Image (cartoon, rainbow, N blue to C red; front, top):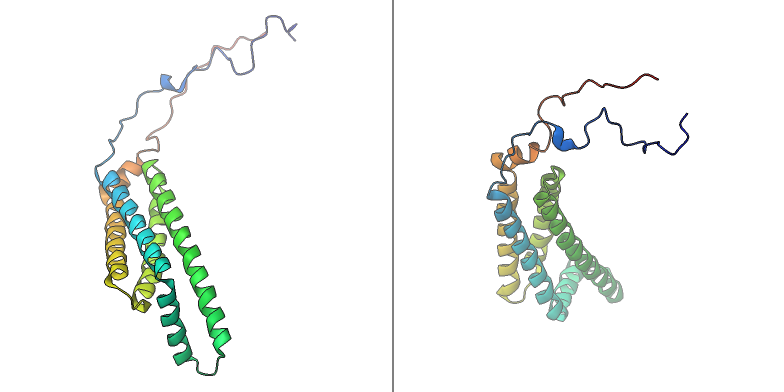
Length: 193
């Protein structure tokens, strides 16, 4: 046992390399231009989704009336108060989904820029859900063409951004985070007391 006066902290072992930089360098693959292009397109898609949501929120009464007449036509035995409640709940869910899609798509984009492999799977899932919900809303909306234009532009940008994120150079860049080959071990000259 040592008396504690000359004892080095536990993590300072002279037989081990002091830094990871003592390892041989790994060939770094530069980030392909497809990654920032994909990120830009996904950000534009979220802006378009936000614009579509804002346009629907501004003209909410007309959209609510359209949904109420469509639901009342499909379910004639429902009371008007039940139809109104169902449409209100549907619009609330639509608003929550819009916020979740915006946050999720931006988070997946940041993860892609941070070189996380799971970001491409998240983008694929958000793209599929985004297209389903936005397509249904744009078809049900009978107002101006601005909502359909925002939905189409956002969907196109999101699909293109997701496709760019799944191309081969991006996958090669993402897989380069793993070290190729074994980490060399050095012999220790540990003193035997």
